[in-house]
Amino acid sequence: MFKTVMVLGHFRGIRLEVHISWLVIFALILVTLSTTLMHHYPEWRLQTAVLTALFTALAFFASILAHELGHSLVAIRRGIPVKAITLFIFGGMAQLGKDSDNPEDEFHIAIAGPLVSFGLAAIFLALSFLFSPFLEPASVAFGWLGVINLVVAVFNMIPGFPLDGGRVFRAAIWRFTGDARKGIRAAVMGGRVVAYSLFAVGLWNGLFLGNLLGGLWIILIAWFLLTMADVHGKQFDLRQQLVGIQARDLADFELYPIDPTTSIRDWVDHYLLPRSERAALVGNQDSIHGLITLSDIRRIPPADWPDTPVSRVMTGLDRLRTVRPDTGVEEVLTVMTETGFNQLPVMDTDRVIGWIDRNRLLRALEVQLATRPRGS
Image 1 (cartoon, rainbow, N blue to C red):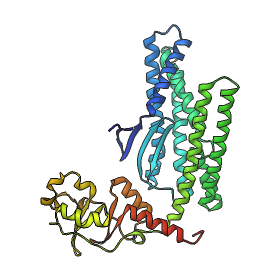
Image 2 (image 1 turned 120 degrees about the vertical axis):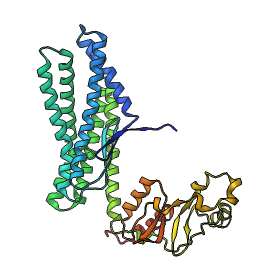
Image 3 (image 1 turned 90 degrees about the vertical axis):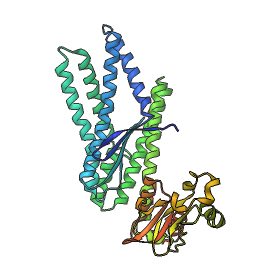
Image 4 (image 1 turned 45 degrees about the horizontal axis):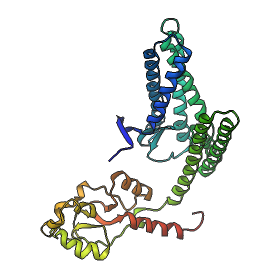
């Protein structure tokens, strides 16, 4: 199966990955910069222009990664886990494990990325000045990197989601009003204003200045910013609604475990098909040994089902992620997403007291949200 994300490695527990769309912007920078260098420096050989462009594109790649690492390392220092950093066509994104608990954390995490970019801009511009007397290609590359990092830093400080400036703006509103919701709404509104402004700039470039490609690119950026601003707003509203809902509110505490010696054939005929259940706990009322799912039995040829006990293909309890009765629903969903399991046992100390199925969870969650008083 074709993968759209390539994992480069890990740094301090953070997964570093590149979305395939990043190759588009990498190739665009490489081709455009090579052509531009050949035009402005006709005395250069083709090899010099291409190698300079290649170095610059790779260094720009590293600069965006450093920008996101700035966010991530500050987040980790402030107790917020970071799952991954993903580079894609519109830049980079650090996947934080949770939202900031206070405006101070939000501010410091948000400002870290632009500060890294400002610092890189100063370093690259200084290197450009130092190399200018004796190595022109290096001076040109560092000069371009200095300018582009400065542009990245300034653009990211625009006060609108999902830009870093939007998070700084949110932190400021949150700090002065004491209300995180007012902060997020102001930042989302700022993001929409930025997006619509870019739409106008893109249309102006394409329709009146004749720069169709540049105008289209600006419109795509505007569309991305508008989409992400709305997504951030909706995610925040949903998280606010989920506050207070725990695993105990969504779990099924009626355990109907099947005996470990039960054959796959018997489980399918007498449990899976009649009840339309895709999974079952394996063990007894006093001791749960593991979980068997529909995907587990697909590895076994149907002809072998009558002679294969469920214990042979189940996932043992020691290999399952479990949750506590007081685990928040957002963490439950995160665990399901990270592990790929659609079912999670609920454990009280060392005993399984219930389990959560993804489909049942979503139905129960819908009821919970629909029956909650407005504003709670």
